[in-house]
Length: 95
Image 1 (tube, rainbow, N blue to C red):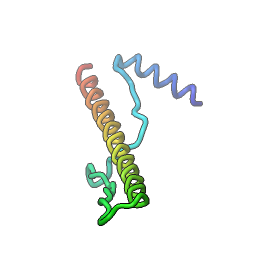
Image 2 (image 1 turned 135 degrees about the vertical axis):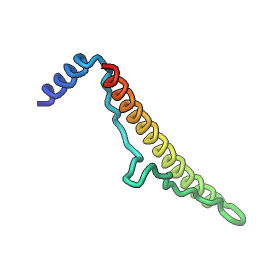
Image 3 (image 1 turned 90 degrees about the vertical axis):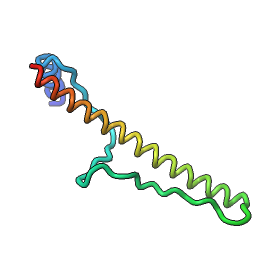
Image 4 (image 1 turned 180 degrees about the vertical axis):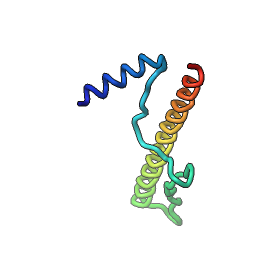
């Protein structure tokens, strides 16, 4: 079954003369529009900083950084999806 789908998609691509791509990955799109990131940025520790507080802060900053990177990766995927739709409209209008 999977092979039939792949072959049909390939045949459709060759018949239409346009490039066919699928973006694989997460997305940030929602029903309410494009959202801001929801990553929590930790605040610096107050007062004297011991090793435990510094390690804890650094750990939270790594989590924050990874969250922002995931958001940005998903945004790039969304941009690719939009560009694919734009190219599809151009191809359709050109044919």
